[in-house]
Length: 219
Image 1 (cartoon, rainbow, N blue to C red):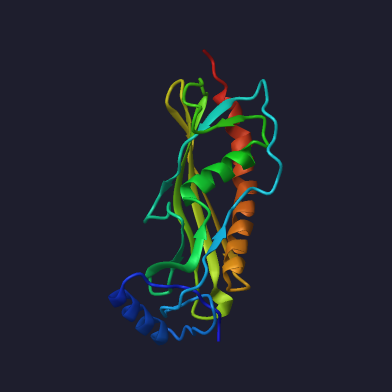
Image 2: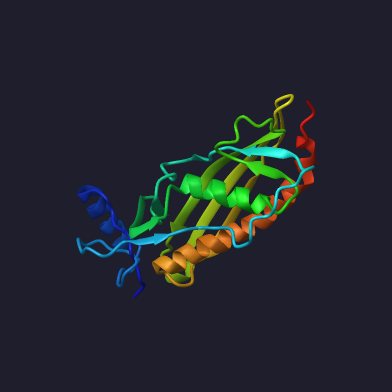
C-alpha cells in the first residue's frame, strides 16, 4: 500500500473523496494521504533557486517582475493536490514557507539574475524599467495517480514579456513540466517540485536571454 497525506477540508467532500478513491483503487496506508482527524506537527518547506544571486550589471536591461497571477487559489501556503477524479485538496500538515506567489516570483527573479538583466520586483516601481515580466501560474500541484508509478507533480507557468516604452508584447510562452514522484512523502513531493522548477528555469532562462536586449530602456 502507498504512503499518503491528503486531508479534505469539508466533511461532505471528504466522504465523497474517500468513496471515489476506493472506486479508483487508490490505496491509502501510511503518512502522505490522511483522511482521519489525527494531529501531526506541521512541516514547512521553502523553494529557492539553487545558485548564488548574481551581481547586477551596469549595462544590462532593467526588467520588472510582476507578482504572479495564480489560478484556483494556488497562491496561498497550502501545497495543492488534484486527485484522479478532479477533486482538489491539499497536503495534510504540510505548507510552503510563505505564499506560493511570493515564492515563485523570488525563484524566477533569482534564476534570471544569472543573465545580464537587472531584475527588480517590489520596491522597484520608481525605477525606469525597460520591460515588465508578467507571470500566470496555471498549475503547481501534486497529482497522485491510481498507482504509485503514476504519481507526479505538474507545473505550468505562462510568461508575458512586455516592452514598456511602446506596450509591445514581445513573447508569452508557457513553460510546463511533469516530474515523477518516486517517494510519496512530503519531502519527496517537494523534491519533485524543486526538480520541476530547475528544469523549467533552464527553458525559460534561454527564452529570456534571447529577448532581454529588446528591453533596453531608451529615454
